[in-house]
Image 1: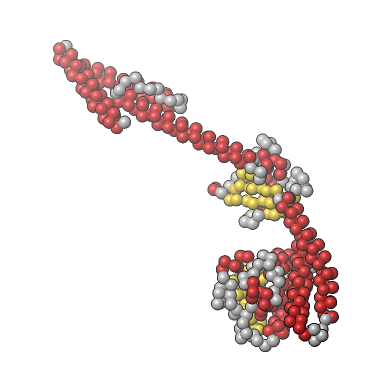
Image 2 (image 1 turned 90 degrees about the horizontal axis):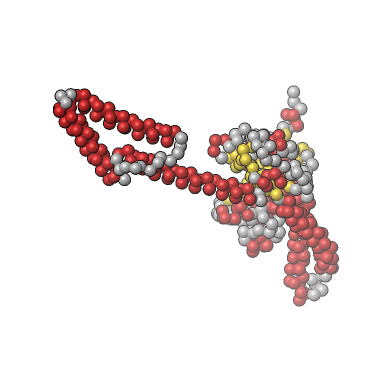
Amino acid sequence: MMRRLRRAWRAGAWRLAALFAIALAIGLASHAPIACLLAASALALGYNLLRLARFARVLATQRLVPAANGSGVWGVIADTIRERQRLALAGKRRMLRRLHDFRDAAAALPDAVVALDREQRIEWFNAAAANLLGLEYPRDLGAHLHDLVRVPRFAEWLHGEAGDPLADLPSPVDAERHLSLRLIRRAEDRSLLVVRDVSQLLRLEQVRRDFVANVSHELRTPLTVVHGYLDMIEPEQVPEYESILHELRNQSRRMTQIVEDLLTLSRLEARDDLPRERINMRPLLLALSREAAALSQGQHTVLVEMDDGRDLLGSTKELHSAFSNLVTNAVRYTPAGGRVTLRWQREADGGARLAVADTGHGIPAQHLPRLTERFYRVSTSRSRETGGTGLGLSIVKHVLQLHQARLEIQSAPGAGSTFSCVFGHERLLEPLALAGAP
């Protein structure tokens, strides 16, 4: 193209030079050279202005520039612009095809997708959004989503940070359907709402819970019978089976504890909240330290630190059980001569945390995310030697969730472990002496 343009420029220059040479010759013959040169200049200028006007009209109508009839400069310019227009049109068509493909793919998704602007108005939604949220096209385009989906908790969640998904929300179309919502932030304060129907998953989860609860309940009676008969047999009567009877009793007690822990988990999962009572933290920490000392039998140093004098609002029975579980684990997994520290401290955001720190073996980083799974063990042999069931941290996690709290775990091999129960400021109470002060 550049070679053609250079040739066109040279040809145009020769033509213009020939035009002026002819005009000059005619002018000299007619004794009016200046007039002839001016006429030639006007002719060249008029021709170029005419071609320029044609280009302006074509470009104004956004049509393709017609193919050039000649090989001059204007022909090269016309062909160049035509090629650029053709490439731009082809790119636009490709983009439109991709946009249509994206819209078709989004429309075919089983999950609802709603595009929102910065003011939470609806820009676009797919067919699943109509089925799950009751939106209607095109009536609801441009409307505020919280005005159309009138479900408790939804508007508050939508206008908040919405960092975490909103789980188990009843559908405004059918209350029997349960939805999980996630808000994805995108450019220019716009967002994308993704809604999934989790009704089947919740039903399966309920079936699992019922199965575990029923099986655990049914196992209690035969285990009680087996354990009772084993207690009736005195090892001295059958000395050759003394070691076998001892192992049978230990395994029977362990099975009974597993069943009790499974029933506790099922009971916690079936509840939405727990009693709200004032829990005096100082006596609770002292009681936990006594339990740790009794379990340790003098083999560990147990310390209590209180950096926060506030009390806690929650269920005394459940929280004592959860805290005791953490303290028991710290003692069991800390070698003799180690230290276990119970610390109640204030958080920067106004909350508080109960931290149980030990100087035990520590836990590798790859195991930390899975510690609260049922029956998950970092070391199977060590857990069984200490008498653990593998369900304690699962119980702790569920108890904390019912108190809108969370479990944080920090550990490293050889550096011990710290298990922290972190509570929000809404769960903290001033001590009674301060609360009653004027």
